[in-house]
Length: 107
Image 1: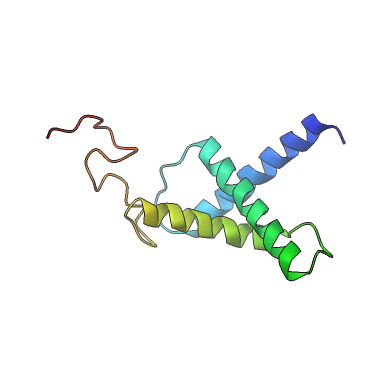
Image 2: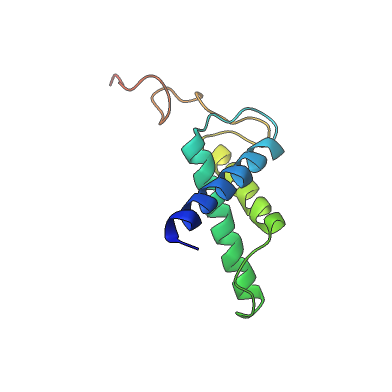
């Protein structure tokens, strides 16, 4: 398989896994398609590392379920980082925070 086909398939699988991870947690997540794809690819990468470490180097790839679980963990971590919780994404709670519409702060 060529590198271009590999990267396209990696992007599609990452997008699907990231979208399923976003759907698994209740509430809206204000993420773009690229952020969703990055969540899926990151979840698959972390899952691959976990499987490699646990198996002692015998297996190199992770399955869909482990990638999905790691992607859900990443989405949950992003929510917690934004000040939200399990059902609340937490965006817009802090004026001037990253991702809010107000970019100027008055001191």
